[in-house]
Amino acid sequence: MGLNRHGRRLVARGAGYGLALLAVTSCTAAPPSGSAPPKSQQAQASPTASPSPPKPASSSGPAVPVGAARPTVADGPMLASVRKSMNSLSSHEMPSDEFVAVIRRDAPDAGELLWMKDDRSYCSAIVREGLARIECGSLPESWPRKGVLNVTTGEPYQEKPGEQPSLFVFLAIVEGEHGPYDYKGATPEAAGPIHDAVVTFGSGRKLSLISYEKHSRQVPKTEICGADGAVCFPAYYPNR
Image (tube, rainbow, N blue to C red; front, side, top):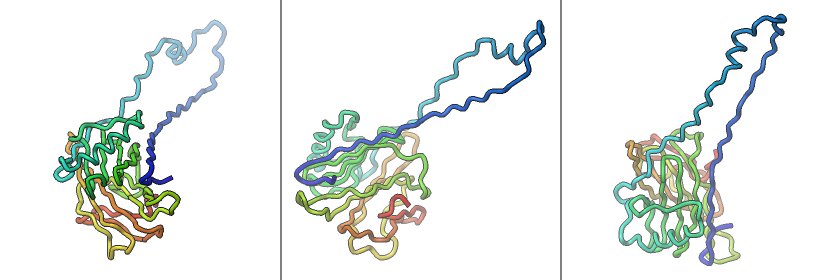
């Protein structure tokens, strides 16, 4: 179900991790009657300390927006729309404005925002006509494209209820600072402009946040690349 100006949809996605344990047993001959058990068995019989709990994932957050990505007074209406929608998403919190990156400013109540409480967790917001669609999740541990950490499948936007969506909004998170970004070769007819922002962590690590649109249900075959050519990814084939 897509976002329309008559309603909103909030999505929270979490990443779960499972721990698998492999137990190995061995069979040995029974010792002669009256003899002492082997030293290995004596060692097993002695009490052992409990294993240490796993260390939590490293964190160097929260991410801080750089330059034009910092919110301004003019972004107030858009930020207010997101905070209002966050009230319905009790499992996540929105930080103070200084930790929210503005990727795109289209109007006082439209644009794309993203924030990261650490170097794995993120929440993004797509705002149109004062209504926000929010999605929270964790960056994958691996990605087929080097340096590309996440690309969304495209959020549909409906002008009117019941109509087929004619606008799809995409977000991407890329390792490092390689902007500005542009389409590789000629810009597809149905493709919208590309906007990008940069956030930095206390460790000095930087991430690029990218947003762009598609104004058709057709899927143009094109890539988006950074200015230095170090990072490229399929714009509308995020799972390939």
